[in-house]
Amino acid sequence: RKLAKTLKGFCLVYLPHYLGIKPADFHPELLDVLGNPNERMIEILGFRGSAKSTYGSLALPLWAALEYPELYPFIIPTADTSLQAAINIANIKTELESNELIKQDYGIITGEFVEDWTLESEEEWQAKNMLLSTGVRILARSRGQKVRGLRHKQHRPKLVIVDDPEDLEWVRTKENRDKTERWLRGEVIPAIDETTGRLVVIGNQLHTDALMARLKRDKVFKHLEYPLVKSDGTCTWKS
Image 1: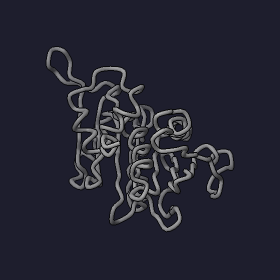
Image 2: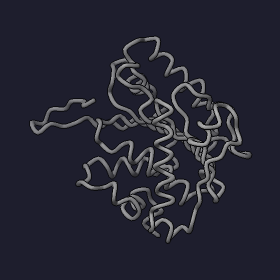
Image 3: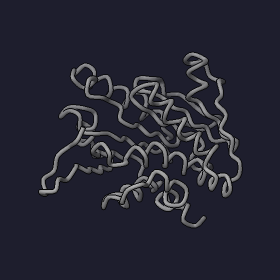
Image 4: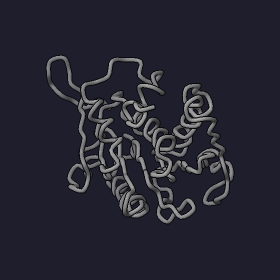
């Protein structure tokens, strides 16, 4: 239980089934930053297979909801498509329902899909809007969807994770790249709680003018960059 106070300890204790290979040298730094509530604007640029999504879109919201519900009563994980957003939240629900050690240490925390908002179809809300018995709401969104103005009771979003907001086809045109940045700056950032809210943007190097490349020039963000290092010592990005 002491270990679970940190994100790294939580992963080691409760999510070992996701840690099937030896950790990378950068994983301790990544987990320390993700688990630090004082790091409020974070960009994580990593190669595919670096486990950035496992830690950012699964472990982080699960840890925040279970270990610090008073700090993170409203969590919004986002993805590039509605399908991926639904998958992300379903993975969280699976751990709550099936992880025996989580149930032993935190009790039976139900995660009911609810439909108390009507911004999209009833079917979509039942798949992406989860209210935990602890009072924490986890609401999955996809690129371009409304985030600004959403509240859970009196709470604005306290933790927003933007995971792979673009794909290779999407970033081909400047119009699409501009749309993504407008959504992030016009919908996502203004939605976050001004005093304690956190934003984590996770992605890969898809284009020299894609969102992740643009954010690298933004000094408001803390930047973590993990390229793939080949055996000969050279670095490249693996998409």
